Length: 197
Image 1: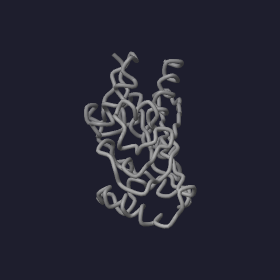
Image 2: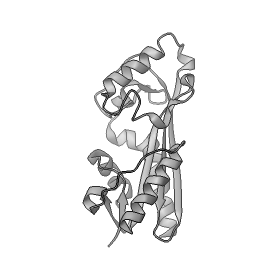
Image 3: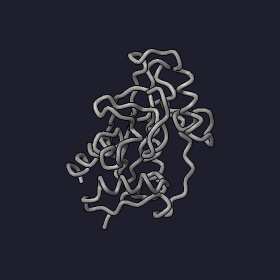
Image 4: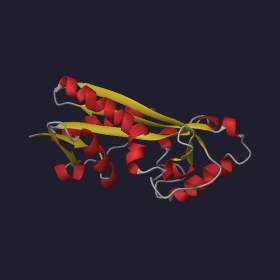
């Protein structure tokens, strides 16, 4: 069976990816499972550039097809920050409880209609023959006024989704996968893979 290596060491993300791509005639492996150990500097200026850089470097290191994603939170009032720096905002090792509290503080007196935000996910597939396949997904919402919810991770506890009338961290994994930025981007990628492979 042919393989696709996914650029993550995150077990939760691998589970999500396998659920979405599970019916493809490919074995989906994490970098660790594939024995690929490359340190990739994410120095792109967009989510797309970072995803492509990761996918291409892993494909070159392994000789196998590789998929990578880059995602983050864009807050319109903060000029789309933290954006591509979402994971590194306030430092890589800073807990998200502190990051979320800081964002709420930065938006303290900002009215609801100006708190618009979105989660963005860019996905890239790099094939050994040089082809590059891209997809992208977004989830629109706004930054709420509190930290709430037990599910999800990262900025989910401050991200309010008007169409669901709840915070992202209040959705079940199954509900979230249907509407999330990563879910949309991976579903689009799955369709593209089915067309070309």
